[in-house]
Image 1 (cartoon, rainbow, N blue to C red):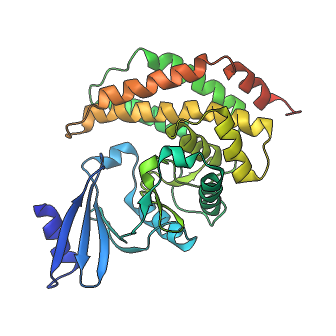
Image 2 (tube, rainbow, N blue to C red):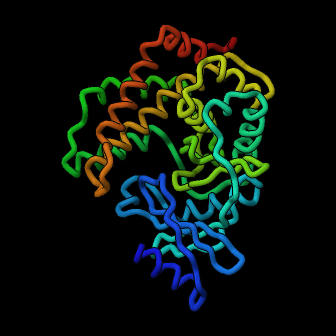
Length: 297
């Protein structure tokens, strides 16, 4: 809290402020700051976050773009040398995972995602395969031994890369956890630190797997997003769910070697390795490869 107070004194000098710590973050420290008639969120980047591939300049620009297209809070200050980001506080409510499955909510969420994906380019790039490989190299450099699941997962990931082929990059969030959505009458998406130009199907799959969607839920998601359901799109989304969990598992592996926080990163990684293995073991998984590779799908 002392660091937050010092930051607030620099950001709003000689102005009384009330600071409240916001829970829920693993990588960063977030605080609600009441200053005069304004209410803000101060985001203070955690230690060694650059090793996770986080670029605070990109996060700032992505946050600004999200506000411009109407799906993010207004970003009002950025202090790059300190890793501080200030946005207006949104009086929104969380959206439960169960509610995310409703057709009306899926339509609203898909509209928000599509607004960002179809918007102007942002700085930075996000490639799930490159992220996995970078996390592995950095983790090993910090003395972390790769789990036995890694080699098989990496081989399957390479098959998905080949099946997916070259795709045009669009602005993506890349961390669509349930906690990053708020509803204040409009759908708002927060926490843009992993944003970059990437594959829209990674975002769709990331949202899907983080909300534990089944195939029928994914069909509804695709219909809300594209206004139709193409079998190749469904197969692509289901394959990319594997890549979402692989990235998340490797994030946990790397964090286990670099983070100073008291958090079960090894267990977190194991959970995502188990889920991606279950995905690959599904009887439909091989069929998805064939569908993605078919010219008739």
